[in-house]
Amino acid sequence: MQNCPRCHQPITSKAVTCPHCGTVLKAFGHPGITLHRAMGDTPLCESCTYHADDTCTFPQRPYAKECTLYTDISQPQLKTSQTYAPRRSLLESIKLWCQRNPALLALLGLVAVSFLLALLATA
Image (tube, rainbow, N blue to C red; front, side, top):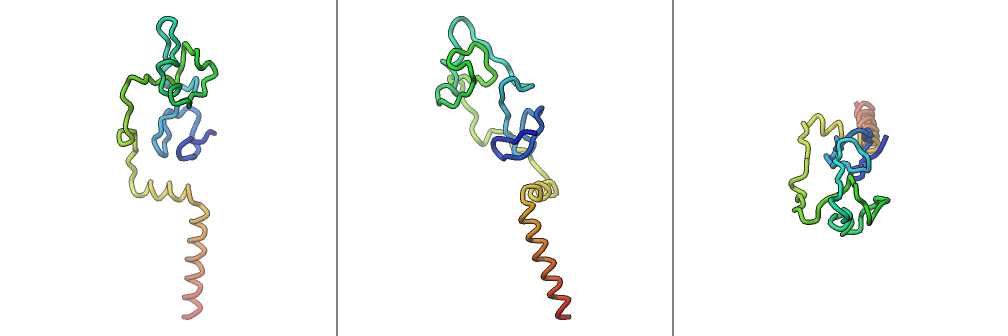
């Protein structure tokens, strides 16, 4: 299993978005991601945001004619508030918190048990 690059939770290899934090997963050859192709002789890298900010890890960079990571630099980018953020019920949030913090949960359990034993010893 893979881990989400944002929240580091385990995800399946077929997931298009992270079920925990909603991050859109982009990877070369990932199912569900569009394959962009260059028109003419100009490579995609010249107009790609990943090439412009030097975060591209594509092996064919800077001469790529096909790319799944391509994002046009002339298109407006989504703001953080516009990204997908799943709404969870209180029970789902508690379950997710327990999965992310098992050590803290165990420590809280030990404190609760010791508190109960102290109450029983005084009674």
